[in-house]
Image (cartoon, rainbow, N blue to C red):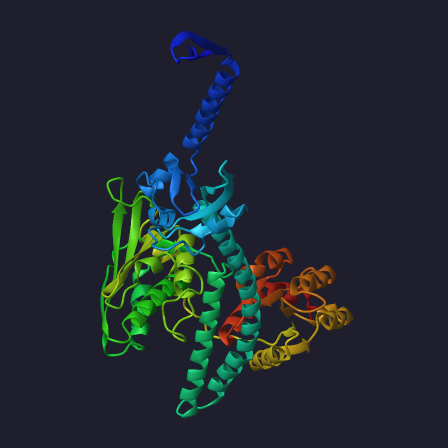
Length: 543
C-alpha cells in the first residue's frame, strides 16, 4: 500500500487534523519488478552474446557496449564516437549505415575492419525511444573464417578450371610441336654436319624442347602431368640445373653453391626436381636482375625430431634444398599470396605467376613442405624439405636418374597410322618411312576401321592418336582388337598420362607422349614388334 498525508486547516489557517489517503501499489510494484526483470534479462542476453553489440545515439556516440565489443575496442568506450573508438577513424566510416538506421530503416553491410583486418557482417536496427529520439542497435558477426573458406573454395574451383584448360592447351600445343620437332630432327639427319644450317636446326630443336618443357610445367601445375615417381638421388640433378642456368645469367649475378653428394634418395622424378630448382633459381635471378647480387643454393640432409621447431613435418630424415638471393625481397602482405596461381611480383612480361605454384604442387606431391622467408630490400630465402626414401643409396643404382638411349633401329613391318591432324600425320608418315616401315595412313578413325576390316592380317602394328572426332583412340583400339585380338597398338596422346586409365582399359601395348622424337618412336615400335615377332614367324608356312 501507499499513503499520502495532507494537513487539515481551519478558516484561520491553523492545523486542525490530518487527512490520509491510501492507495494500492500492487500493480505498480508488479510493473516495476517486471521492468527490472526485463532489463536484467535483455542486458544479460547482451552481456552473454559472443557477437560484439553496441547502441549508438544519433550523433554517433556509443550509449552501450557489451563485453565482446569492449574486447574489440580494448576499453569501455561509452560516450565516445563509434568510428573513433571501434575503427580508429577521425571521420565516420566509409561504409557507415548509421544515418539510414536513425531514419527508421534496418541496414546490413559487410566490412573489413581497419582496426584488426577481420571481416564482419554488420546488422543494424533502429531503437525508438519515448521522446522520439532514435538510436541504432548494431551487431557485429565475425565472418573472417567463412570468408577464408569461400576463398579456398573459389581457389579450388579456379584450380579445377585451370586444370581442365591446361589439358586442352597441352593437347593442341603438343600437336603443333610434333611436326616442328619431327621435321627438324629429319633435317638434322639430312644436312651435313659441317653445314652452317646445322646450328640453326639445333637451335630450332632446342626451342621445341623448351616449349615441350613448358607444357610439362603447365600439366604439373594442373596435376595432369606424368607423376610416376621412384627413388632417386638429387644432387646431380641440382648441379645439372645450375649449370644450365649459369649460361643465361648475366655477369652481375654470382652463383654460390654447396651441394652434398652424401644425401639419401627421395621419391620423385627427375623432371620434378629439375623444375623445383629452375623455378626457384629463376625467381631469385629476376629479383636481382636490376642491381645484381648472389644466388646461393645449398643441398644437405637434416633430421627433424620433436626438439626441432617444425610443426608441419613428421619426424625423420629430410633433404633441405635452400635457394637464397640478395634481391629486392617480398613485403609481408604479399608473402601469403606467392603460391597462388598467376600471382607475380614481377613486372609485366617478366613472369607468368606459375613458377611457385608449380613448385608448391610438386613439393606437396612429394609429401614435403616449402617455406619462404623474406626481408624487403635485402633478399629472400626459400626452404624446400623433401622426405628421404626408406632405403639408402643402393636405390639410386636400381633407379638411375638418366637412362641410356638405345641406338635407333627401324624395320620393314606394315604400320597403320591414324591421326586427324594432317600436319602430324604427314610427319609420322615420313618419320616411319625413314625408318624403313611400310606405312598406311588414315586421317579419321572410321576410315582406319574400314581399311583394317578389308585386310585384318595386313598390318603388324597400329599407331593412333587418342583425341579424335567420331571415335577416340582407345575406342578404335577396342574395335580393332575385337577383330584381331593379337594386334599390337600404340596410342599417342598430347595430354601425357591424363588419359592413362582409358588407354589401359583399351589394352594398348604402349603410350607415346607427344611431342615424341625419332628415337622414342623407333624404340617403342621395335620393342613391341620384337615381342610379336615369334608369333608372326610361326604363321609363315614352312618350305
